[in-house]
Amino acid sequence: MQFTRTKISDVVIIEPKVHGDNRGYFVETFRADKLEEFLGFKINFCQDNESKSSKGVLRGLHYQLHPAAQTKLVRVIQGKVLDVAVDIRKGSPTFGEHVAVELSAENKKQLLVPRGFAHGFVVLEDDTIFAYKVDNYYSPENDRGIAFDDASLSIDWIINHDELQLSDKDTKQPKLNETNDLFEYGINYYG
Image (cartoon, rainbow, N blue to C red; front, side, top):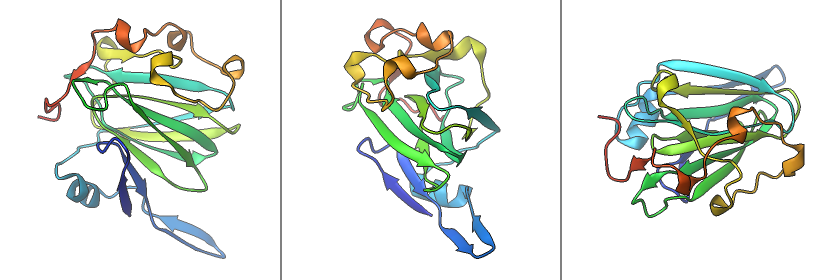
């Protein structure tokens, strides 16, 4: 596996090694020991989630507050998405900045989205299957979000706004500067 820090160093692209031949392929999609060695601390994933969506579906930008904050390890099993992580740690030198990475069944890339980041994705192909691990259980009372179309975030979702399919919840999220439900930079949310 190859681990690459993005322009926001806490967000990591993971590229597993694909072993293929005329029969198909084999790939290790997760190795706790290698990930923890790269990060320098333990992550205990406890729940796997999966969604299937059509082209134009946008899910996000979501996060959970501490003590239910989540690290996500995301990947695409079928199809393609643009995956986005936004730094929502007040005081961070990259506060409000984002990383956007194309994840697909073809490129097999994964994105590690740490605690303190809002996460979302837009589906670029029909019948896309998106899967992810989290290190904390879903907590409805700690569930929060940021408006996907907040102009201050400057996210290019690739698909025209009028072609996006959103949940009712995702059409009503506050802009980043309208919420106090954020994280503080420099606090260890893993302890």
